[in-house]
Length: 252
View 1 (tube, rainbow, N blue to C red):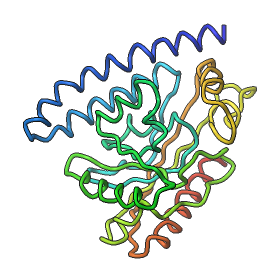
View 2: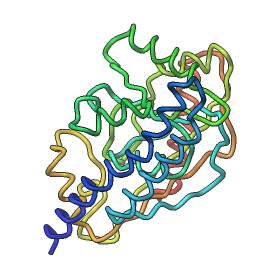
View 3: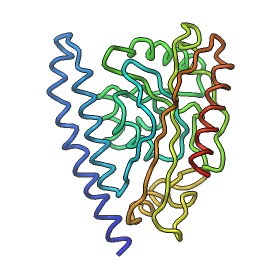
């Protein structure tokens, strides 16, 4: 039953993702004409996040008030499902690691739709992405990224890297923060093993394992205040402290 559920859900994801992407294509005409298509893109990404969450049995609970656009939002990073959690909740585009661009179809789709890719091993690319962040902070759009730069096992929050905080620190731009926490509905399938994707876990094996779960929950908690700091390392440290404290409060 578990594998039947997993592969049925995988098939539904494979079918639904390109169909939802087709909804975005008409808005490319707006872009070609030099018109803003942010609202259209936001709607498509929200639909994708919500439909994908429903397919995989993920219920998203929201605590606090989500930020209004434009915004810069940072969050802890536990799994690839974080993308569904945030895109179904706020109107923004993601900064994703460059490896995602090579994923079959998904990478191409995300590139076309406007997701920002980064090679974190390259200092020059970090500079380029900060420029992209500035260009993409528009009235109807926010920027979302994970300063841990990788996923964790959920026992704690990894230190935040300061590279992508160069723009908000240089311009004293307020940064919003959120924490994501998962809860398995099955005590025999702990979050650390079945939901969080970390370490040397292989993607497909973990995906089938996750899709085989009957259901699970995510709680995204938005911070009550924004953080402003002119030093990017201090900004990273303060954001880390707030996200960690908020995460541990929900976790415990």
